[in-house]
Image (cartoon, rainbow, N blue to C red; front, side):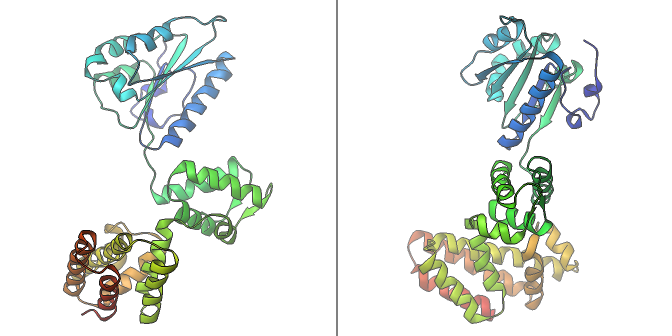
Length: 337
C-alpha cells in the first residue's frame, strides 16, 4: 500500500480518508468518536460506493473473529468498515500479537476502526501509522474549545449564527459534553429558524438550568457582598430548589477553595488574572473571585476553607444540623471571622 501523509508525526491531525486501513479513535468523548466514524464512513463511501458496516464489541469478540471479517468478502465485494467498540479489551495483552500481525499487512478491502475510552501506546501504534493508518484522540474538550465547537456546529450543521454570549450561556448550562451541546444546538436552531440567530436570551429560555448553573447562582450570591443576598440564595437553594445539604456544602467549599488558591498566589506576588488562570478559572466567576481573594489576607481565606472542609465532613456524617451549619458558614464568609 502506498504510504500517505498519515505516516507523518502529525498523523493525529489529518482528515480521515479512504486510504486508511486501521483507525484508532480513543478518548472519553463518545460523541466525537461517533462524528469521526461518520466522517470515515463518508470518505469510504465516496471512494468505494456502498460500504458494508460490521460492528463488534471488543470485550466479547475474539480478535480472530473480527479480523476474519476484515479479510472475508461481502456478497457484492463492497468495501467493509469493521468497527470494534471497547477496543482496549480487544487488543489487551493476550490478544495484542494477533492484532499486530494483522496491522503489519491489513486487508485492502476493509477498514478497521478501533474505538475505546483509553488506548495504551506501543508497537501496535507504529505498525498502524506505518501502514497509513491513524491514532486519533477524542478526549473531552475544554470549555474554550467547546465554545468554538458549538458556534461552528450551529453554523455548518444547522445553518444558524450563534452569538458568542449565547455559546457561553449554552456551555454554562449544558456543560462541555459534545452530544448534549449538539442536541441543544439543534433545538435552538429550530427555534431560531433557517439562517436565524441564536441569542443568549433564547438559550436561557429553551435550555434548562443545570445543577452546575444553580450552584453558580449560590456562589454568585456569596460573592455579591450583600448579606441579605447570601442568605436569600441559601434559603432558596434549600427550600425552593430542594437541593440536599451535602451538595450545597460542596458548592460553598468549592468556592472557598478557589478563592483561597487565588489569594495564596496573589500573596506571593502573582497578578490576579494570572493567579486565576493557574487556578483554572474561566467565565463570569473569574473577576468576582479575584476581587474576593484580594479583599482579605490569604490566611483568612485559608482558615475559612479549612472550616468549610470540616463542616462538610460533619454534615455528611450527620454530626451537625445541616441548615445551621450552612448558615454559620455563610455568615463567616460574609464577616471573614
